[in-house]
Image (cartoon, rainbow, N blue to C red; front, side):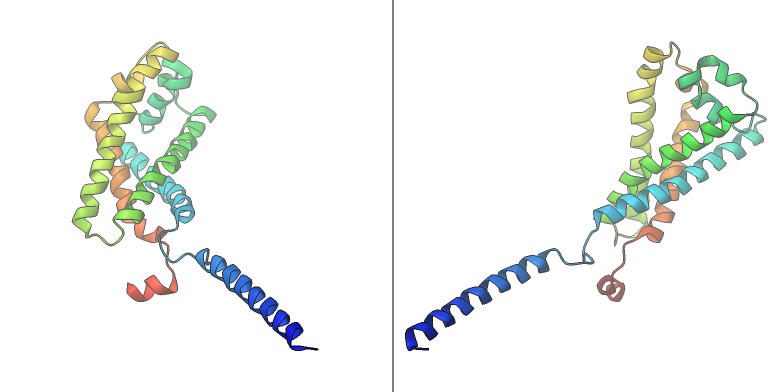
Length: 202
């Protein structure tokens, strides 16, 4: 093999080396597992923890209803007025109430995602007081949007009555959302994404 052929082969090998280095560099940018905030994990954790927080807020309402002598699942009956109308307020037992409880937990799963996302993304290392304030503000905002921004006009428009807003005292609705938010505050560390690096940092 003459000199020119050797030089040509050497240049080909150098070009191939640069290509491999570039490919390895692009793979490094999408390393696994992620070292920082992991959005998909926060969504999944928010769904799981949100359902548990919904159980806590529902239990709060059941105990409160029993204390004042109401039907234990009065909150579920009132929420079921959205699809069923005033007839839901007469429910005592049965499949409808069970489905209502499941829908309540499903709603908690949905609402748990933004709570978990915000706490994990921006307040993961903040102190308890800061995180308490954040979840309180989020709970109040959720109450305001749900009751006064959506349900106050949507139920009358679709069903012809405003039972949810009328039958649930404003302070009960507010406390229900706050209990949900505070439960998410206590549960959020259980859904924290941990890698070897941030375990050492913790």
